[in-house]
Image (cartoon, rainbow, N blue to C red; front, side, top):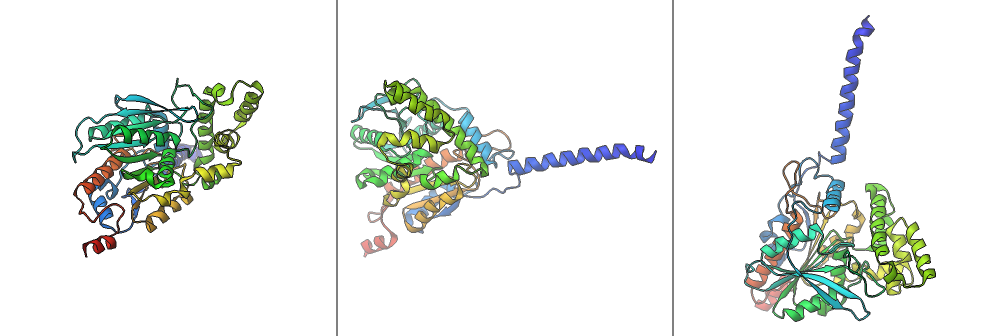
Length: 422
């Protein structure tokens, strides 16, 4: 009888244990115990950097993600990947078509500012989106609308082959580090608006492209006020090893991105592989069996530019070999919980910022890959921390250029300025 009397208590104990287990898993998976903190900054103490950090409070204040899910890099990344942004606006732009020397047709969308810039100057943001992205993506639309309202003209590159219902005009599409289309867009903007100054912005793969473009030739930095790169991986050769690992589910993300690349390539199969059925079948068979970006890069992408091996392709197309040549003010932003960018890759921006006075490296505790949602408990705000920090940094940079003493510039050190005064 005593045993029968103890059964309800035993079941209650099991229920409590089950609830406690579920709560523990939720807390661990959602990272609820993780604190909020300001970005971890690496930079040299220069007059310009002090001014930028003072004038752009997002870089020194706490980044506070939504309480219930915002501390999970996976959920931040998934929400960005599936929804893009919340309540995305629809900025109206004009699509421009630029013929390339190899027969390709580059396209970009041009959005005029919705008011005067606070400095009264003509400033254009030239924007390079992430892998397989274009101006119609929600995170791009949200950022463009925010920048337009602050008085910036925006030019957004559409990666070659990424736009739906836009046929390729040559057997080539975008690759990890090809800067040809971005350079053509920048050249058009410089010719069409001879008085404008440029702010260069790259998201993820776009961050690699813009940093590589600026570092390839010093001429590319003319009329550029500054550059902002968000969530890039800096070195594809190192990244490929981490993408085959299962920690942080990177191997799974690798599969998903490879599947998306397959869809883009297959939509252009006739333009890319020609009318030879034998050649097309050989390329498509390798594509269908690929389960990673590296396999697609090795079998398809590297051949667009004649690279003899995957190693050569990654070495030649990574900005890590060019970024040290960038002398304009450069803000590099990453998130510590980005499931796509392994911590080992962040030694590149950290070392660069420690050595070069024009570089600030900002590492947030949370944000995932291009997430950076903000909000109180559950629902995120339409504008993200990423949107605000890019425009805030750009505003500070424009203000610095407007009011700086004659001896100071983004490329001059404090000692050089003192020497000029003497």
